[in-house]
Image (cartoon, rainbow, N blue to C red; front, top):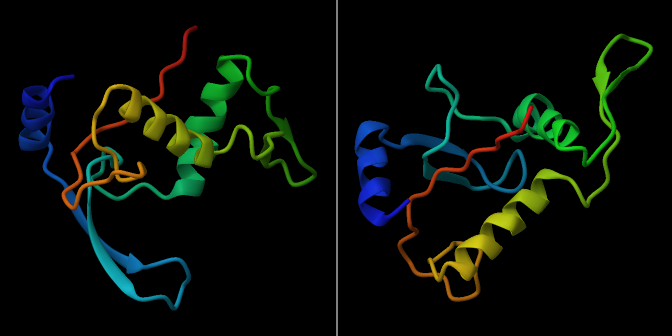
Length: 124
């Protein structure tokens, strides 16, 4: 998507302002504008995204085995640090660097981040 497409997307779906403690529960509260959110306009919790979106996508892509149920009938996935959400962050940074796009995760980051949206797709 080019910059005009990014701007049109942000105009149609403006960022959601969210203030949360940083790095730990009693950390300094910071406010950020979030571009990716659930359909009910609430922010996405990383753990929920990981369990409902990311890991099922990895299963569909054949990266990790299918989930199992534990003794309490909860869905469990077998993963390591190689497949976690942190790797999605690294992938995003690598892709934006390869496209010569500024990224907050890149060493040459600018003071004003470029708005982006991420999606995980699976082939069925």
